[in-house]
Length: 240
Image 1 (cartoon, rainbow, N blue to C red):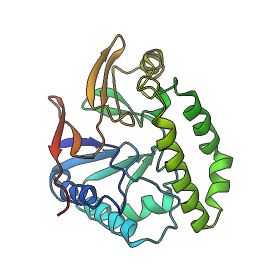
Image 2: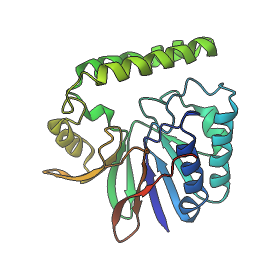
Image 3: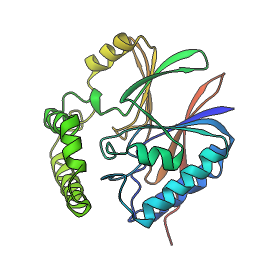
């Protein structure tokens, strides 16, 4: 059986074709897999497990169905859905992972992460990340009224889009020295991440870094078995 890795679907009601592609994936390829790892930004925004929207409820039902079928699901937070919590995990059958997590993948130690912690040249983002991912900051944010959290999430998305439009592409990509430091720190020769939306397989002095793609015109999946790792994509049909 295979192990699958995906990230950066950015599911939102405004992108129904991506949601449908995700459901097709869950009811197709993922049903035949031993494990599914979701490496962050499954959602465009997640403001708390108490959001009662039917859109999110349906996604949770689909994930629960996959979990109940026998596929083990693991969820690692991204920068858009870092507030996913225990209630979500219980509802879906997912196991929540820490932001940097080493697994044994068919006998090889592999580091999993969302990828944003590698982008150390983006100083403004890293400053913002330290602020919102601070446990106290997250706790306080979670205690705001749901309506206020939704408004804050929308403001953050708009500010992020405006800020990124004025940044060079190199600043928003990973820092090579940080990549090598992670290889050494975690004692691995392979790391898998998303976040940068630049799907590729990169070879470094410390090992191989596999970048998952975002789901837009194409969906991206990394498939692993005892023989190989294969990064592949498939076309996503636009809604009629």
